[in-house]
Image (cartoon, rainbow, N blue to C red; front, side, top):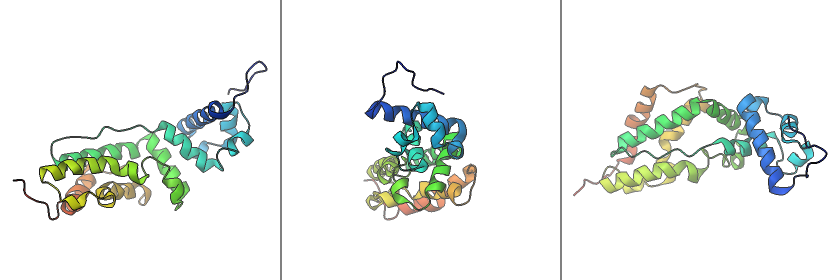
Length: 201
């Protein structure tokens, strides 16, 4: 673990914050949220606990900030039809929630409980970030006449991924079988967004 040597310049501001976040992200990757401690992060970053607590009030806040360093942007599918796009988005989300990084996310969500202000800091839980890909595919579907314009609302748009998330968070499933994804798409999501859809031409 790195500690500043006698000849090193003391880090401050953004440089120190970046070192702490990198150390916390490494701890999450190696040990999961359950194994990440403020002591370990401080030792790895070559700083002290007070420097961490001045920036993040507790382990959960630091864990969420570090997770943001690990998350990546997933390309938005464009299969040419709404059902294909919905299934691709669900399958991508399922792969993520089933992955080691997804396990960290599930632990953070569980630890946050009902703390909406903390959950909103997670990319997958933030309203705008979570809705963006779904609004994109729905916008295309509306233009093709496959969906009702009324579907272009964040709460409607994200129904499918919220149902998938419940499989992990509420039921504790390690992954969702593909037939569950198809059921979410065909039995719930597509009938909802196609309501009052207009026919092209």
